[in-house]
Length: 358
Image 1 (tube, one colour):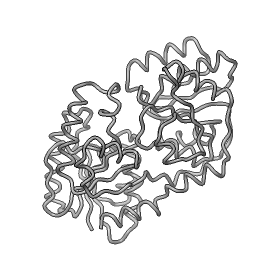
Image 2 (cartoon, rainbow, N blue to C red; image 1 turned 135 degrees about the vertical axis):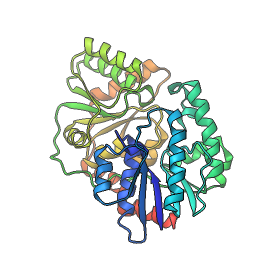
Image 3 (cartoon, rainbow, N blue to C red; image 1 turned 180 degrees about the vertical axis):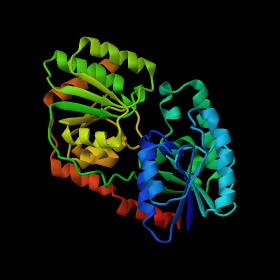
Image 4 (tube, helix red, strand yellow; image 1 turned 180 degrees about the horizontal axis):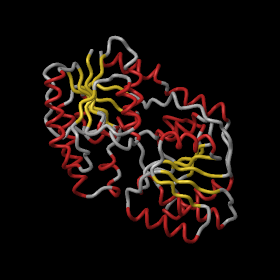
C-alpha cells in the first residue's frame, strides 16, 4: 500500500498536529507492506529532516504557507503530486481539504483534530470561522474516511454535521512514545508548553500565577510556545512587571522541551478547548504531576491521574481555583502517570491505523 501524506504542519515549527503526524509516520514506516511518501511546503524542522534521512520520498512545494489563502495554490501542487505518485491513500492530517481533491487511484482520508472555530468562536476571526465552516463541509463531502484524535472530537463533529456519522471512521489517538531518556528531577518550577493564546488558557494561567505568588507561593513559572495573540503578549509583560518568577522561553525546540518536562515540579495545561493535548501525555511520560482544566477530553485520555481545577461561575473564579490548586502543590504517583502514557505507544496505535487503512 502506498500512502501520500500531507505533512505541511510539520515543515517549519511543528505544533501538536505536526507531531501527531510525525509519530504515526514513524510507526507506519516500519511495516514492509506500507510505502510512504510525503508532501510539504518546506522541510526545515528537525523532525522532517529525520524523515528525509530515513529515505522517505519528500515532495516540496518550496514556499512556506503562513496564511489560509496560501493553501489554495498549495493544494493545486498536492493534486499534481497525487497524479504523479498514484497513492492508494492520500492522507490529509490537518482538519481541512479546502478544494475538491481527487485521488482516482484510491481513497482520501482526513484527520479531524478539532472544530474549535465552531465550538470556541472567541479564539477566531469571523472570516476564519466562515472559512473553516465552508471547508469543513467541503471536506466531509469529499473524503472516504475520517480519523479522529479522540472520541470527544468525533462527538463534536457528528453533532455539528450529521453527514460525518455516515463516513467510515476510526479513533486514531495521538502517539506519544520514543521520547528521549532524560534525568528526572523535581526542580522548583511549574511548566507550561503550548501556543500562547486564549484557547489554551494562558491568560488564566498568568493571572492565577500572580494570585499564587500574592498568597505566598514560591515556585517559578516557565512558559514555552509561540505567542499567537497580541493580547497575551501584553498580559505576559504586565504580569512580569509586577510579579517575580515568570520566565517566557519562546518557541522551545524538542530536546529542550523534554529536558524541561523531566525537571519540572508540575506541568500545567489550562486549556479552554482541546482536541487531545499532546503535552499532557509527554509530561506523564516523565511521571510528572499534571494540572489541567476540567474538560471531558482529559477524562477520556488521562482518567484520574491528572489534577483538575474547575471553571467556576466566572473567569475570576477560574483563576482563583487554579491558584488555590497550585498552592496545594499536588503530587502524582509517578508509576501511575507513566502507565497512562504507555497506552499511547506507536506499536499499538500505528498497528491499529494500518489495519484500518488496508
